[in-house]
Length: 398
Image (tube, rainbow, N blue to C red; front, top):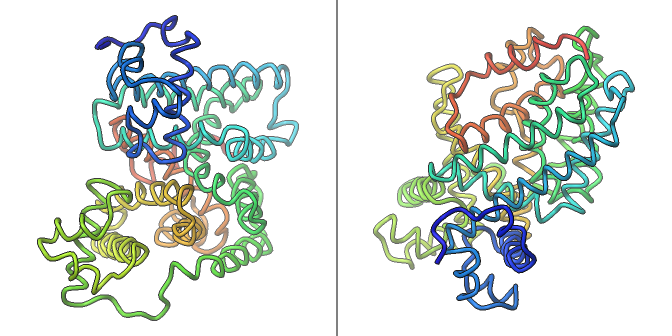
């Protein structure tokens, strides 16, 4: 069994690529937690023994998958740099179009890579051993945008900002690329992200943007129990246990048996209070949001549960790509981006609270994408105000 990282030649041999691509397909369909050597062997029409011989154990296969995604991104960089040769997309006024096209491509032609990359980054956020390769993958994301923006005077600042934005937006684009109101909301957010900071905000922008947020409440309604009071007693205790399980092991770990084990109660007791998987997940989601809101009230900008909520939103989007029952949760999480912190963001931007909700949402999407990268690589974190200063103040006009 291989114990050392594969050489480039071994990794790129036809037999190895077939196995690695089979693993990528399995991850896209079942999630990283559903990838076993046996399932990959079935997908690749190979034996477990051949995977062990050519790649190694499961951990080695995950590493090979990560390196494969890095290689694919490098190939994309070459294509895009050639396409943009000599063109400054900022001066040409096409940068927003490029961002939306990149997100659409990730939802369609590159769908497997998009899901696999998101799964790998989430894995690294819980597994320090995965951080180095995840860091290399995240670095390639920023490098791609540096190549696209190589002719722009602001390319360096913009590439970090856009790659962070895309990291958060992409899982939702995979799910909702065919939903018109989502696509319009995404376009509104991207254009706000890249808007000339010296131009005064127009009220019509905010009306349009928040109208889209409200319109998406309809498809998200199944994820909400409007007017339902906060749970009490055993139901409340179980909700906190579900939240803890989501923090430690992710949404995919939630089930009646796992919650019962974590809570030290009978499965029947869990099922009594939360009959379906949807009920379980919603209970944990709402518990996490209650924690974050309480923390935000107690200490401005400091919310230890915020990282768990950020991770949760991506896990929910990925779960929805495999089970449509999670889709209402995911669309609600996307449409409500910045709901809890938009006033803080407005202050950091130096604008009146509520004056430009499209821009505050764009900042939060980018900040979340940046924080996902921080969680995956173990880089030093930064405050929201510092992120705004570094990413937005440095480029007053695009």
